[in-house]
Image (tube, rainbow, N blue to C red; front, side, top):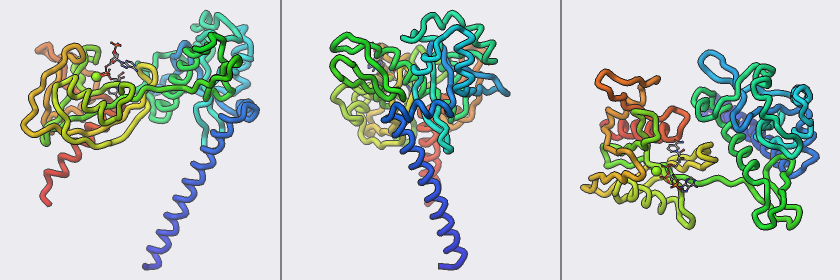
Length: 352
Ligand SMILES: NC(=O)C1=CN([C@@H]2O[C@H](COP(=O)(O)OP(=O)(O)OC[C@H]3O[C@@H](n4cnc5c(N)ncnc54)[C@H](OP(=O)(O)O)[C@@H]3O)[C@@H](O)[C@H]2O)C=CC1
Ligand SMILES: [Mg+2]
């Protein structure tokens, strides 16, 4: 090993160690805040809060992008005081992460009903003026956020929604109580613990070797196609869901499949998207669209998909009345799955 190589390796090792160390420290800190209510309450003193109103995040506009502002505990207490709200409402907040310097990040919804105060929703426009921002539906804003804010706000919204929908014990009917971090709720009358849940969903890009299969639901924006998606049924493995969804939606039988990656997705109410590539049996490529599920589905060539990936919105109606063929934005795992397929096709067509 040359001296240069030795130094480079040691540097690399040191760098990896530093990265790992920061990550582990952060993870252990968040674990402690979830387990210990007092530690979590203390972390709120130096922490920062993302604000929501009826599940819409507070955003500010900056150069065609949305930014998610954070507020200190002091600023939040001042705001609640100004609008006649009890500062105890801050206990409704949920822990969503922390910075490398261990500044804990929380999310709080000022519009949902709270056991600590009511009618906060009456003040929405005044709050927006005071906070110099707007509460914007996450569906409209997600693709104009940077990756970190998109991920934090998606987690926050899913968690706030889950708490709002699990106020009562399904066994005793009594009100449940959230822990300080919001990582669980407990029924005080029978000690049943409820943990936040999400729905597993598969997203599959089917290929016949040279083309890939993309589909549209009538609810999609005009011209947009995506890979096939479907919720896992209870009792199914990911492999079984993929085979069933492909058969149900387009009438094809999957021959092989390969896991690609996963992503948390805030819609409709918090899903774990599990993305896979799949191939169909040779010679069995005739699509039979299930019109109860899809508007249409079709095979697309490598060049058609590569061109669509480069296309940038807004996608306006063309002179012949149709809309250009386009694909989900970069942030969506379906985009990344399709992009990987395009890149793999290029590699496999290169001479060995
Ligand atoms: N991030 C990404 O890149 C992408 C994400 N997705 C997401 O994947 C999700 C699933 O895709 P989709 O094709 O609609 O799924 P499905 O093909 O499974 O069809 C949706 C239908 O399944 C039923 N359903 C079964 N279980 C559930 C559940 N836990 N929650 C809600 N509905 C359920 C509902 O029927 P009924 O209403 O009749 O009860 C619903 O209308 C979508 O919500 C979408 O947001 C999709 C594509 C890309
Ligand atoms: Mg589907």
